[in-house]
Length: 76
Image (cartoon, rainbow, N blue to C red; front, top):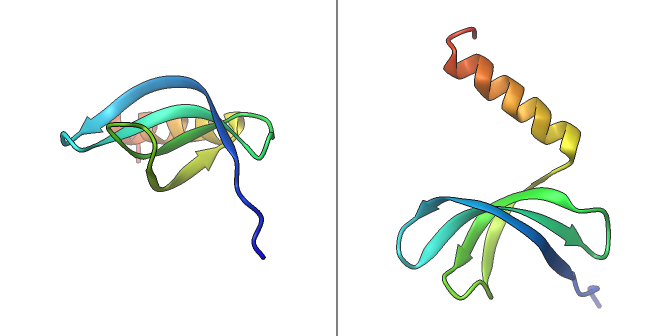
């Protein structure tokens, strides 16, 4: 039998898209009582259902910011 995945939204950082029924949110989430990670995924407006998403460590999130900054500044 599969183990139940637990999560705790430690901090809501912000919403990056909203279509009325679902929001794409950036949060700090602790999965299975682990260290909080940056998490990007869609949540329904009640915040009780989520879609698939991506979780990043701090170093991965910093690297993502670096890569995107380089892209948007036209240095790719």
